Length: 138
Image (tube, rainbow, N blue to C red; front, side, top):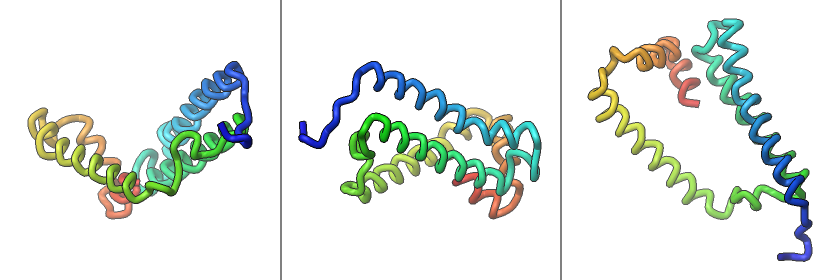
């Protein structure tokens, strides 16, 4: 242990961890509920998907930052660093592309194809536009 490491009680760590998970879930679900219930700007379609993704990214990352600050830790404590960003990005990209290929090449065609209700709903979320497709991907 480095002399700069500060010790936080196990009870405080547990409370912060549980609180972070609960508040994180709420922050993650909140924009989906808002756009799903109010149907503002078309609901859960098109550009709203980008707004949802940005809200989730900013609020959940901020929550993690403040939770780590309460624990007197930094992002490296949970494995986030720029040290291996290229390897981590490549690994994420490969896993994402492999999963997508598996879904579109094997799973979806063999379980009902485009007629599946979840696939129909997903396609309708794209809003029939290029912007909607990019927003969905985000």
